[in-house]
Length: 125
Image 1 (spheres, helix red, strand yellow):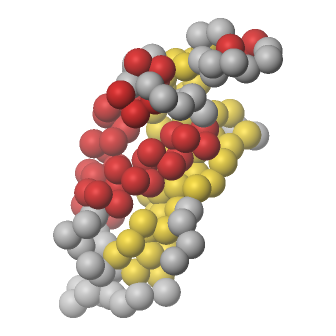
Image 2 (cartoon, rainbow, N blue to C red; image 1 turned 30 degrees about the vertical axis):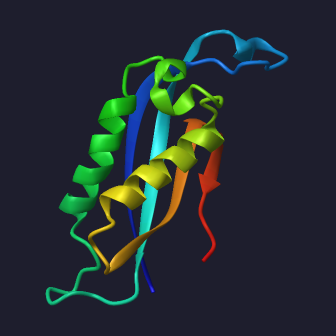
């Protein structure tokens, strides 16, 4: 299996409802995101997915999250926009965007809110 990844980032604000500390107040992060997809085989030009295509689809998701208050995003009305939930959201959105590409599947999404703190979300088959 081939694991193909791209790294990107976005900046946004959030707060964690019912959090017992400073994170309950509005604050911002420069989120670092790594998205990996898996391919069992390579195509006729020996790639699993073109980096350009993957970057474009991930970029669409980053654009909707960039420079906003994440708590106001429709996806985070019922849950906190934590790193965990952000990774899950990005995973699900990319899964939808790649639904027509049977050659690859979303493998994992890592979201870091600081250089030393982050979370990885993946789904087991």
